Image (cartoon, rainbow, N blue to C red; front, side, top):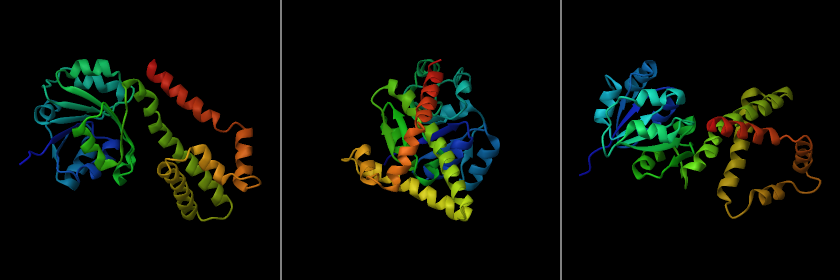
Length: 254
């Protein structure tokens, strides 16, 4: 009979608030930190979870320790805690140097991940490096896990978590445009959100067809789709998205 895995969470903020409802569907046992007391208390009451007395208490008792604090606080939070061999630290701290973080959690091993708040609906495409079965099993409760082949890939790939946020702005802008044309706000929001999801589903599922080919099927000559794309390309509308992503990668390197 297997023993339940104990997962300790250091840093219970916005992201964790949306992940716990999914993760508790697993057979794991969860311990929350007092860091983020308001959210910890709410989650503890809702899901019958325990709040630890200290971060060291979490480290002493957990097999996997999720580190979900602000990146610039990460090293300070883990320094001086007594880690043990065979333990895994699952870091959600994007932009924190893994080499430095690994140094302060030795002899525990470091695994990096980048989930998003859609985890609550099991829709988070979560980056993972290196691939780790225990962490993968935990994170799959939140959506598909995408393991990367090298650490060098993690920095640019993690920018897509920001892209997730940018898409919210795009959905909001297009929804507002529909409302200006007489569509009720709730209907506009639902229509744009579902159309965005439909496009993403087509790209995800039709893996034998390139994105360019998928678009060519829609943007046929003299179609409205093609006419709109012509304007977007003429105004170089997609270049700023690449510029924003490049900026964030450069920031992570500095």
